[in-house]
Length: 398
Image 1 (cartoon, one colour):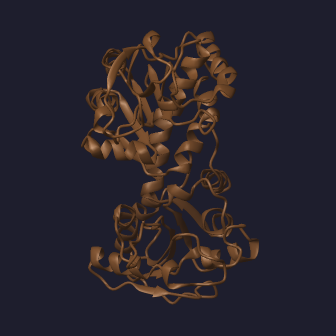
Image 2 (cartoon, rainbow, N blue to C red; image 1 turned 45 degrees about the horizontal axis):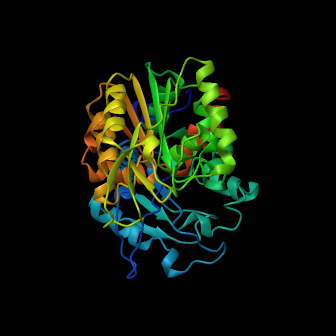
């Protein structure tokens, strides 16, 4: 993707003495005491800040946190705990500034954190006046927040329209490169794993991928709906009978291209949705009326694992079973280990997927793990994200 990259500006000496505005994703979880409970996003944002400081810039950083009311800043919405953590990680003083839209005092070699950007009136509506004011604060705007790339807001889109230079930070650049490698120019076969409780939440993703991938592996309640579409009994398993026609359309689209949607040959069932429920392995044709399908069976797991090992590119979104319950986690574990062992380029994203990756300790075996959430899903749907589009526009008009 043709965009201006912040690293290139730094390497070319174009950042020294400049005022740099970084839109980061510092939306971290806070405990009841207001302390940060998980700081991965903060740690991931530090390299961009350090890159700017090393290049001699005067650095401003902002982010949203939670869901504040515009025009009102309250203690739970404040970036103060984030500011303290950045100071600790970087080993230097970082000042938190409020009411910053009208002007920011920061010198070269310094970094300041600008209070929760969603407190500013007009942020979520991408207000033009607000965007122009923020753009006037800087010489270079850097978007390093992939998690908000699907939202056209003042700090993710509007400011990029009016800043003298608009570019992608290292995190956003890495996401763009990984997604392009996986979907725009993939090594074949391209295999996508899309799993979850409902077809309705990922129907547009399935439809988009059906025109691109060589194999579309479905899991969870999504797989159950596809099994219904093929005439199988699924007992009392979670499914959406009203979307059977859409499932059939996805399979037809795949077949028309010589591709496939491999459905489970066997599954693990129980009589209740419970971590203590007794698991039983059954062939698909053996499902009883009171069975709940909670995982893929060993035959299916082995078949899919073998296919994954021969893939050129793998995109993974969603566990294939109720992996939170140990008795029903073997299918997801087998898929995770096959992905980790594959020589394919592997891209994974989505909250449950990240939890499975962490559970099975394969973080260092996945080529790229996206933390984008909604942005990652919209990419899979084939959408061009607003933050990507404005950076493309700025590159073309540069």
